[in-house]
Image (cartoon, rainbow, N blue to C red):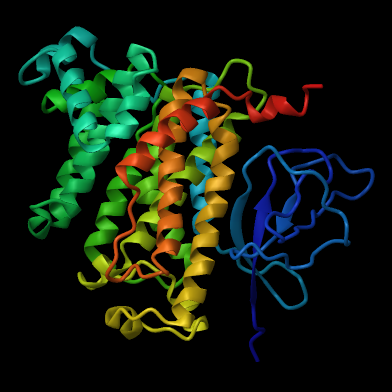
Length: 425
C-alpha cells in the first residue's frame, strides 16, 4: 500500500534572528528554530499557500514582523514527517530568480553577454539616435500610462529614460498576445521575439525602441532572465486557459507582471540610507507585480470568460461550490461574493507586502511606484462597490480619484524607509 503524501509549504524568512516572523491578517506562523548549540542558519516556516498556519513548532514562537519578504514554497512529506520527493513550487522557482537578480544588484555587475561599443550600437539602430529613441519611449509611456509617466518625471533623466525603455518593451511583448494581431501570433513568432531579445542584450537592436533598451542594459545591472520569463508568460497564454490551483496561477502572474518589478529595481535603485536587503526589495517589487496582475484578473473575469479564459484557481472554485459554467453565466450569487472576498483579500496581502519595499527605493523613484500601487489597489475597492459584479461591470478608478492619488503618492514617497523606522526614537 502506498503512503499518502501531504503537501505543506515552506516559508523562508530572510531575517536571521529568532522569532522575527509574525503572522499577518490573523494567520500566525511558527518558526522552526535551530537546535541549541548548532550554527544558526536560515529558518523555514511552515505555512500553506492560503497563508494558514499548519501548526508546526511551539505556540508563541513567532515574534515581531520581519522586514524581509517571505517566500512561499512547497515540499512533499510523508505522514510520518520524513521528507519524500521535494516538489519545486512556483514560489521557489521565482525565489531563485529573485536571489540571482539581487546578487547582480549587490555586486553592481552587468550580465555576461558581450556588449558592443555604444557608438556601434547606436549606428546599428535602423534610424535615429538614442535621444530620439528614448523620447519615443517616453511618448508611448505617456500615451498608455499617463499617471505612471507623470511619476517618472521626478526621477533623474537617466533613470527616467531607462524606465520608459523597459515599459515600452513590456508593452510590445504584451501586445503580441493581447493586441490587434494576437490571433495571428504563433509560438514560432514568440521564439523569434526571444531571439530578438537576445540580440538586443548583445548590443544588436533591431529598431529604435530596441536601441533604447539595449543602451539601458549597459548602464544598469539588468539581467535577461525576467525578460525571457515574460515571453514565457506570453507562451502560456497561447496554450493555457485554466489554472488548477494558486501555485499555477502564481507562476503565470510572475511571468506576465512580477517580472516587471525585477526588471525595474536596478533602475529605480535602493535608497543609500536603506537597511533593507536587496532580496527583500526585489521580493516587494515581485509582490507588487503579483498584486497588480491578480487585480487585473479579478477586474476582467467577465471579459476573459467571453474569450473562453478563466484565470482563477480551479480547486478554489470547486471548494466554493462554483464551476466554469457559473462564470460563463455571469450571475452574482452569495457563493460568488464569498469567493471574491477571498480572492480580493489575497491580492491586498500582496499589496501590503509591496508597500514596505517601495519605501526602500531611492526617494526620487518612489512616486510612480506609489501611484501605481494606490491606483491598482483602488480597483479592488471598486469591485466591492459593484457588489462583486465583475461579469458585466468593469471596475475602474475615475479620473478625479486618479488625480487625487498623485499627491497622496507623492507624500508617501517622502516617508522614511521602512527599515529605518524602528531605529528612530
